[in-house]
Image (cartoon, rainbow, N blue to C red):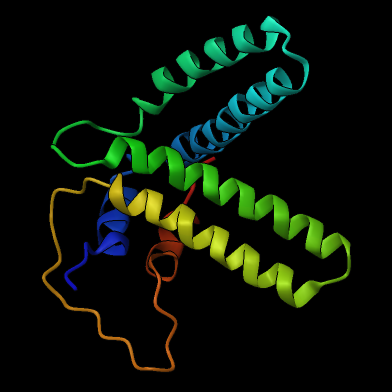
Length: 162
């Protein structure tokens, strides 16, 4: 599979002092929470039939759409927009389940779930990263190596400029 050389691209931008990934990372976490608020508003409406929850849902949804557009570009005919929303939502849900497992003392299961959550979050950034140069290298995994985009972009997500 051909992949973008994230680390090289990020390093070049970092050297020019032009990178502040923390802003987009913070926004992506905020978006995760907005999707969760939409879900909670729906379930609250379903339980109570109180229209105020539909108003909250609509307001939060419009805000989420506006903010998602700051990260997700609609430049092609793909399903990137919808995939992005679902990747963030799924990552957040797995993270919350991992927190519960960890609190229950199920550390091994929690760590697996945290890793799965991180993989989904990494996939979000993979489909929403638009560097100018593509790396033509092919990444080959042995049977013992973990496949996953998060391993490939971990350094990208660690290079926040504070």
